Length: 216
Image (tube, rainbow, N blue to C red; front, side, top):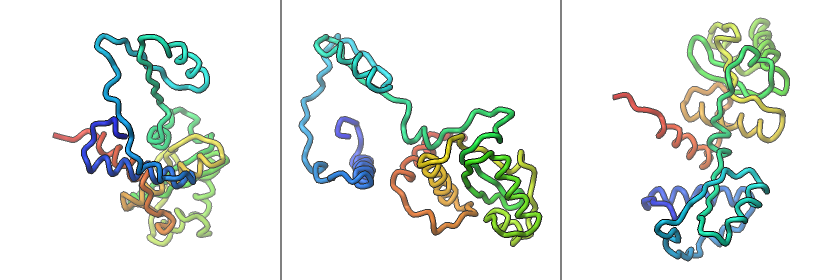
């Protein structure tokens, strides 16, 4: 954190994010209060640099070969939390066949419902549709449509596949993130009481906002 050129405000935000991650993983955060030793810029004039995409033990084995050389080695990764949570699936003809996290949009008020399914998206949509048709009120999405006398559209118009993934902790996290996101936008049909403030989610959403092009 201290190696980046951040102002005081951004450095404090970064520090809070790191603390939050450490606390969630039950690490001792007292070490963060110890000032880091700095040795200045080790890169000498004319020194060669090499960047590797970290993929695991193989990357460690390769980079060790440069340990006693004049090459300055650094590692990078494309598998960041932001990219993982904000990823959008590749559009294809069979996108509703898989399982994962999805989003339903009301055709009339444009409010959104985020859900997950271990079965196919198509099967889950038909369950929402059936609850709407027969007024079962089991589906939160169908309940919202019925209470507001709104219509329901075909699957291609109101369902969006957010992530293809299998049942598990990743699916749960992805669902929570997107529920949090639509809550932040105040267009959520899910129960708002289930979405508590989360520093990591706020940071990712803010980063997405900053990357959006501005219309001039």
